[in-house]
Length: 312
Ligand SMILES: Cc1cc2nc3c(=O)[nH]c(=O)nc-3n(C[C@H](O)[C@H](O)[C@H](O)COP(=O)(O)OP(=O)(O)OC[C@H]3O[C@@H](n4cnc5c(N)ncnc54)[C@H](O)[C@@H]3O)c2cc1C
Image 1 (tube, helix red, strand yellow):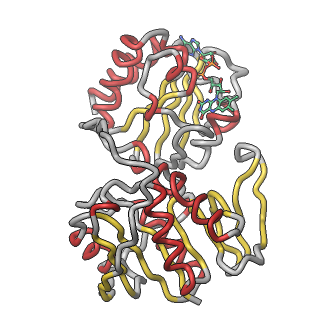
Image 2 (spheres, rainbow, N blue to C red; image 1 turned 30 degrees about the vertical axis):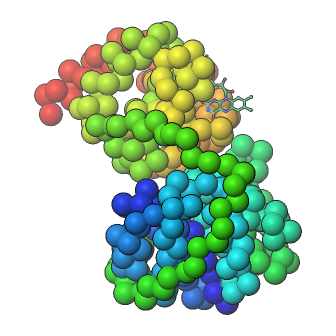
């Protein structure tokens, strides 16, 4: 049994999500290979080779893989699939973009958002926005799996995998890279942050959202998240959204400010280690998942909290 993990990276750095995916592959058992497809991505390949438990890093270094176009990447993965019992990628935007194509081209069912491995053919994943955990057994010859990265701790040791070039395929020609708009954050990335301060519709405006959340996030070294209602209202950019249709996070501390706790939001943050909620409605559903709840007006409580933190 051999497993292929498809690396998420930006041609310079290996993303932490790849490490969590390697951990899931190791839980399945068998030899773990990593595919690094990119352009001038040798540093990424070397980083992948140093991950504990990786046997071989297969490197496809070509212009057609520079931007992770789904059609080219899926075709490459499919061309390598014959040697593998499992193909894994993180259930991030990267994985969600191309992995369903791999499954479709192989004519197998993708198993999405896996949070636990029961056996080499049996996996646990959430359905109904995380309200039900389904245990599924696959009889497909190749199991195509996206991994919920927050469910698997990255390997902590080091490795010394061999590097092996892979011949690039042809360009599918059906999509092309036009441009990208990257947001430079001074704060930790939402998906990997240890502390997240998240705001909801109650913040009332983009100005208030930032006036309340930015100083608190700065003080705590936190990333900022938001509900879909806050994003839809224009208080925060789209990539701040936490939840079923946003990012799934599991920080050490999640502060929910003026968030009602709709299931679609809770699906993205309920695995946080400690959840603190501030809401003026004592019956708000967020208090059902919160470890600590403060009933009150966030515009009063957050300044008080800041004052306390300031004395620390
Ligand atoms: C298919 C689908 C997918 C979805 N995906 C997502 C998703 O990924 N993420 C997501 O977040 N939502 C998602 N939603 C939307 C979700 O159902 C809720 O509408 C949304 O999460 C509500 O956001 P909110 O808590 O900010 O707003 P509200 O539900 O309006 O809650 C605001 C809360 O703030 C409290 N409040 C008001 N003023 C104050 C104050 N001054 N101080 C303290 N508390 C105050 C209120 O008591 C209330 O509880 C999805 C919905 C659908 C149908």
